[in-house]
Length: 434
Ligand code: FDA
Ligand code: NAD
Image 1: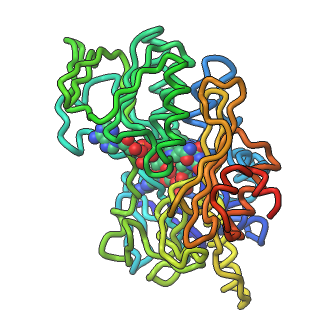
Image 2 (image 1 turned 135 degrees about the vertical axis):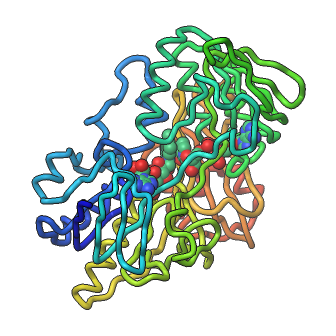
């Protein structure tokens, strides 16, 4: 049985792993000290590209174009960069057993990897319709999107089913981004989701009405308030139709499912403290086990601004938590201290010509401002969330770079609101005064 040992091991080779590697090098890393183990066969890349540029019909993004850290305007870390720095990329390798007590990881091919310090960065996996026993959910051409191999299969199907019919199951991030991507590829798109409006975990009815109207104007059909309960397929096993709970049957050549994600923490069950579905950490991303850190989607960390433990499944936090964990590891080694993580939640999405950003917390009363008419030539609108008389969250569609910086500042500073009606009238002007 092959055995390897490293001072530092990052388990998972996604966004957080790449940003952690860069931070290690920045703070001083000797060749041979660090290994990144990934199930995927490519070096860390900016995962958000998979549901956007990767699916463009022309000029599509392809590796090595979007390796980390280009997504945040940083240096692109090609496989050669890792080799130059003496970082071992152990790719195409799934870890199937983790023994935190003996600091030992075991791969599917029985390779043993030992570490002194472990960073868990295994991210999320998709929730599958077969998890709820939806009949026929294993038919061909029913796709999920998490990793680059999933995206490649979807691209092949888009080419094979040219101008065909696509059904998108789910009205969250994947649903909205993939609905647009398939429409741009000239498929006939129908979206289905159970809630009264899309992206209910962030959008208000007012925000969602804009996107639903905009998508409808692009020719996308939206069916709300029902779910997929079964799929029909032909003699080849290819999906032909989606059966809905309300009795409707939708023809389909391609189905994309985006019904949520689940953090990948099963390897560590019973060995490490958990909270809110993730691995519990402190403000340095240290877990309950010495020398074990957890970052990105899997970490449930103290969100200082709101005085509460949270898990965040977005790329900005994956990058920043990875950097914080490495800073903390180095600080311990050098008997120095660093500040606790003080994160301002930041989410964004892009589809068609649209682009929104959100900062802060979406709790409390809301005030919609600006032009959210989907038929406007240049719609631009936003929403403030107000809790206990203070603005705690801000959403903005089609903001400029400067305006997005302004809304981030508002969400961080939480200015008081005297008169909500005045705030509605002022809209973005309120943010520019802060
Ligand atoms: P990430 O999922 O990036 O990486 C985990 C890695 O661990 C993977 O390479 C996986 O193969 C590997 N792994 C897991 N278990 C393993 C095992 N047992 N052995 C070996 N390797 C293992 N966010 C945002 O803010 N804006 C956006 O636009 C988007 N867009 C977007 C599109 C798509 C298609 C997805 C799927 C997700 C997004 N996100 C996003 C979310 C964002 O990409 C996500 O939060 C980060 O990638 C999380 O980074 P991590 O490094 O934690 O996990
Ligand atoms: P999500 O949680 O955003 O959305 C899930 C949606 O699934 C719900 O809104 C609901 O409409 C729908 N749903 C739930 N059960 C259903 C059912 N039985 N039938 C039909 N619809 C059902 O999750 P997602 O869109 O699958 O995204 C997966 C992960 O990828 C998340 O971690 C997300 O943060 C991440 N992601 C983020 C971005 C971004 O930040 N721009 C983009 C893509 C993916």
